[in-house]
Image 1 (spheres, rainbow, N blue to C red):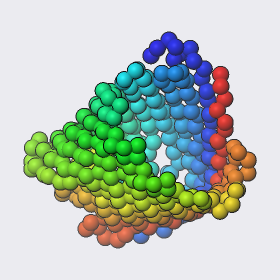
Image 2 (cartoon, rainbow, N blue to C red):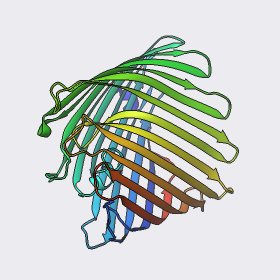
Image 3 (cartoon, rainbow, N blue to C red):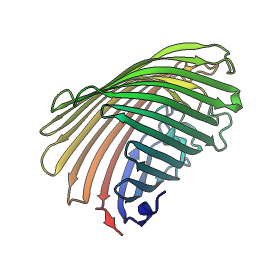
Length: 368
């Protein structure tokens, strides 16, 4: 890191959420009827130092939860994120890193859904990247990433430690002022030693980013993949496809977003998971002080390759939040969330309702 970057001024921006919550099935268990009432504190500080060629930022975050329940549901989670970027005349270097110590009550909900056993999770993430601009319309890129996940005392829960590495080469062409086309060739490796599974995947994608009009923006991608499971638990190769369509529309009072996608992601089950997702979100300004956010999601997850104890599942969720701005830094809110999931071959479905009341603070950046 350059001396000029370290000589630049630091800025710091604090933020915090304090909320009380009622939850009728925090661990999302089928047939569960155990209510929990508690409090949640989210506190963070974004520190940034920048000059004319780059920046360095650090964001530590603490999440503390305390519940009045017969079950042991309290936790203290810590997250530290770091970003570094440096620009040259025609090139840019960037490094993203994260260290996360949390529990499976939140970390496993989206991909594997294995939140029934509350276990401690440690995640380490590092992603260096480099881009080069050989001409005004063309950009070449190299991106790499490495993730290591460990679970504490997770025997007989279906969760296993794993590492996930990825690398890609990209070529982007600025077709017009509104539209850019990108071609990507990538490779990934998932390694879960406990279940002797190693899956190598290669593929290619074509991506399109376009400002369709003053109000509409679109991102679309499509591609193919080939997974080599010769050293895995099944020993078979598999082909598939990936796709994504992300539309957003900005109007006078808010924004719509619609997203449909098929992705393949690493999972705490030790195998790749194919996720078909539908997401719709509306952000609405009711008045100058009142804001409304509503969203709905539906995903169908499938293990790749299939496991003897399948964790294939349907997952649906909905979220509604009404907030009122008190000052530029302070606001209050009320929120409701709903979650539903069903595992293939399992007896019973799981549902969860939660009601939250909270206060949000977002301070203005303070310079050193």
